[in-house]
Amino acid sequence: MKSKKILISRTDSIGDVVLTLPLAGYLKQNYPGVKLGFLGRNYTQPIVKLATGVDEFFSWDEVANADSKTQAQFLKDLGYDTIIHVFPRKEIANAAKTAKIKTRAGTFGRIFHWHTCNKLVNFSRKKSGLHEAQLNFKLLKGLDLEIIPEKRNIANYYDLELPAATENWQKLLQPNKYNLVIHAKSKGSAVEWPQAKYIELVKRLPENLFHFFLTGTSAEADLVPELAQLKQSNVTNLFGQMSLTELIGFLAEANGVLAASTGPLHIAAALGTHAMGLYVSNRPIHAGRWAPIGFDTKVFMHDKNFKNPVDAIQAISVDEVFDHLMEMGTT
Image (cartoon, rainbow, N blue to C red; front, top):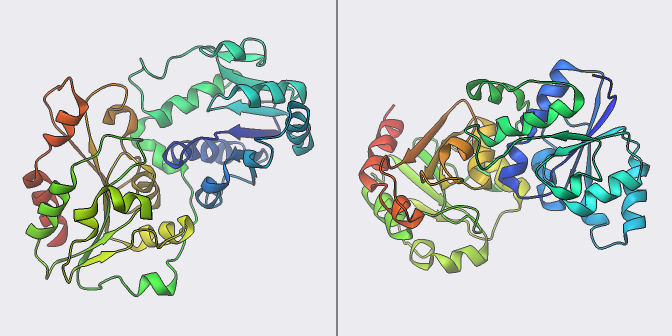
């Protein structure tokens, strides 16, 4: 590989960004002399900063509303000889070309890449049977590297520095109980388990064995009012109270996380916390592509194929999740 300074561009949501970090880790582990930059959004910076494979983080938010000339100058001033468009954005692709970044790798499936990228890789994310984290590696073909790690090995490339929970949050954890974080909403990124099932689960699990922490934004609390207002001694409502940095530290200290396919689930998996994901079998949002990647994960997904994803997620029984958590909480 001839590239010396590689900029990975992924300016979408937290979960997608987390599943891109193994790509950075792989490059740093196998080409330690290469400098790696990450182009993302302000709100994803806290998780990217934990990746030891990433040398520099740059926020596209700084120039997102600027004119094309300013955007191109922004990328040029970074001084990278290669950019990998993991998440394709037309304005970034145009800016990279105008900035004369030497190697510009992107997927053939985006027409605007035909005239902005000089290294096109032909593959389809939606039709592939590979996991999203594996699909990101496909773009390395633009750097003359052909490597698709086995799914079971991808977690080896996270290389995250484990953050510590701040004292204010850490003191909430119960040393003699299974501390379970429930993140019920996903900002529309996934099909969500009904709040009634979360409530039933919380009420059934023994209070002497489990403590529950409800996380999410204040706006999300309004979307699950019955769950957010649940009054039990072993339930702590943390809606709207944590920054992403604080949440990351808390997830690292918790025993487990239960959520749909959303950012906190993927963060937990990457940190090594037991990540339990609620999924549907419908493409392209199925677990085969979006399951959490980590050394301690569990996927709940109904075997039956449902035409309606909402029916599919509702088919996941409370009993199944209850039985798994009881096993976790008593071992």
